[in-house]
Length: 70
Image 1 (cartoon, helix red, strand yellow):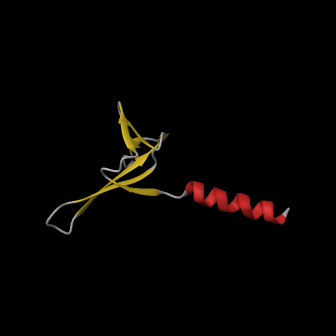
Image 2: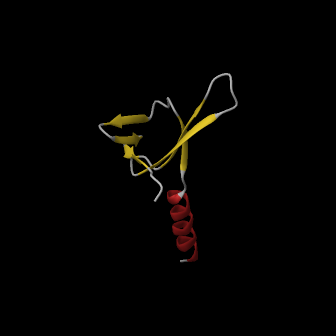
């Protein structure tokens, strides 16, 4: 029983972690206004490095939509 509870806790933690994916990843697909990663609505950050600079653009998504601050 204890092992089952530990497994559930670990899976919950991993499932809730935010993903970070680089722009151009072949698993990212834009369908209409929604962003999908490996066929599921994407939650996490999409990053893109700007060539010849040290800058990185990071866009946060939640359930396939760009997250807006409130």
